[in-house]
Image (tube, rainbow, N blue to C red; front, top):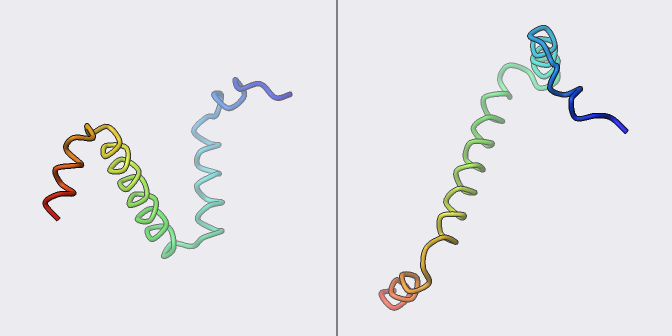
Length: 66
C-alpha cells in the first residue's frame, strides 16, 4: 500500500513535467475551456451548498411568492 506522504514530496520539476504533459494531451486552446468548466462547476457546487444551509422558512416564503 502506498503512503500518502509520497504525494506530499513533489518538487517543482515534477509540477513542471505534469504541466507539460497536460499541455501536450489537451493542447493550448482546450485548457482555458477546461478551466472555465471547472470554475463554473465549483461555483454551482458552492451555490448549492449555500442553499442547503438556508433555513427552510426562507424557502417556504420564496415558494409562496412564485
